[in-house]
Image (cartoon, rainbow, N blue to C red; front, side):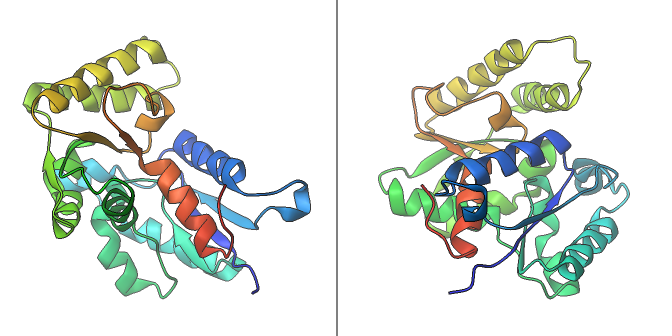
Length: 237
């Protein structure tokens, strides 16, 4: 079977895009350059803030996202992956406007939990306020009978502060301090009944790792990378 070309609609944010590409490389069974997959990246950090668009009626990110997808299509991508969870709030609109297939982070996360962790019936969601308030992720998990608990307002503020500090190359806090804040919020979600924690923002896996918590951690960045490898025609490591 001819391998397919992965198109990455990135820049939301740039470091998450880099971390995603690194995961594709790390999970691809390759002993030399020629055994890796072809990947095309459109990293556009000028896409408007997704949370502001969802919550405050800010400038829509869709036009620039559509332009990026069309650029990937012209460049030869066979399908698109978007390493930004908040951007998936607009997924159906993107699918209506561009014919290129898009892999859903919501779908692959729900399917992974159902298939590989069938005993988990409740998860905690760490994500942007746009993702949490938008409700699409929770609705997709509910389709597989997985309930979602989310942080209270104060803790959600801590999560957003952590996400923006990860994006800020001049942030006053260290990555370890940011991770400590996120671990504390995740711990409270676990105390509220979460049997696992979904890292529902692609910045969060840059500081919070599998094994950092006492419950399973679902790294959406890694799950998406592995799904992209499968879609391209390979079996991930």
